[in-house]
Amino acid sequence: MLKKSKEHLEETGMGYWGHLRHAFKQSNLLIGVAVRSYLHGIFPNIWISYGPKKIIKVYRHIKRFKHHRHLFKD
Image (tube, rainbow, N blue to C red):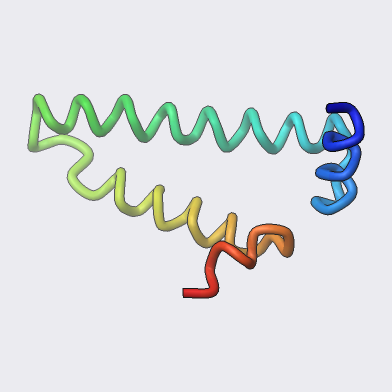
């Protein structure tokens, strides 16, 4: 497992702490999107396009990473 972790960090070009910070930042963003989307479902007048805009932003961000490019060959 440690070997795979090292390989992943090498392919991302990040160190452990940079990778951790990046993962936490993306996770927190997605949690925020999920909470707002639930609330939008209950109250349709709030955060009308917040979810789609943030998901597109995350998609574009992920697409920039070289090690994820194989996911976008379609």
